[in-house]
Length: 375
Image (tube, rainbow, N blue to C red; front, side):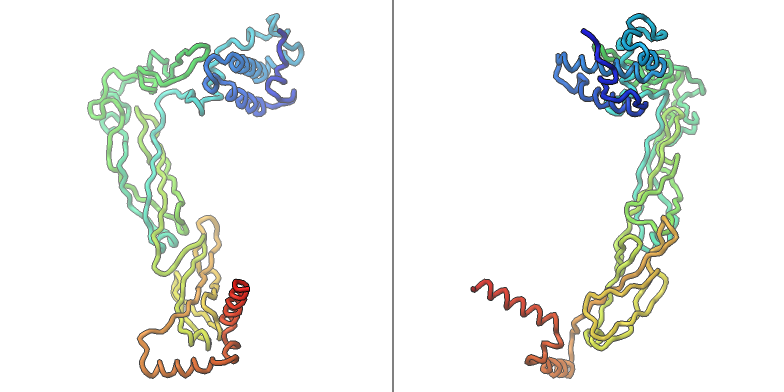
């Protein structure tokens, strides 16, 4: 049976680049891989071999040039320049590169770096806005001081003979080979004849680490500060991971934050809203004055430019938006009640509708609603 053209197998043009070839192969190999198809599916197995064979040739510049000139005949007659027939080499070589993130077949050599850590720091709004330095304490693994992180009592380590220092070994499963951590050295790539007694050969011990963290001005909920190398120490002297300090800002009694803008509610008496007034409102750097015009309705926003938060990502400032809320007076005196009753009497009749446009609109809407319901 004649073989299909390799470009046709992968579904790419003859001008396809390396990235396009790898993307096409990855898609087909994932589709036809035996682990994703029922056992004994000969068609899937054959398709997987076919796309693997095509990728082996086209991803190798030398083989691809020969194939473009002579086609399949180049490899049938040994013209491939030492490559032998494609499709029967070590499947794991390509399998590990393409599927390392799916099946865990990466090419780790030696001990891996330590784990990254996450720490949540609680801040008041003022601390988040202006910046602050915080002392934090985190339980973590640090390099053993006795063996300086090597894990060896005498400082001597040897290359693992089982994996030849790679930290990985191949396990053959049918026609496929799968990489896994070396059982002899637990993936380190090195063995220790005399393990350190303080850390039992691990190179690290449990400690509470105290750090001073600078929180920049303008941070907000969910922002993260990366401290390189302050995570868990790596095993057997491997590099440490990173520490990510995540910000959580507590609720504030006055301000609510939205990005770089701040909001606050300012209670006013209805007489101030009706007649107009000047109000003092708090800001992050003192007080500010706003002029409330007469006949102001509750909920109106007054914007104070540049009185918000200085962005951590730029040099700009947000705004402060003050929302006026009309407050009903309480604990009225007899005289105040008399005055309010006299004032309310002036709204009787049709003349009152002129002073309460929203109320009139609402009542007209209610009347229209009931008319529709009863008609």
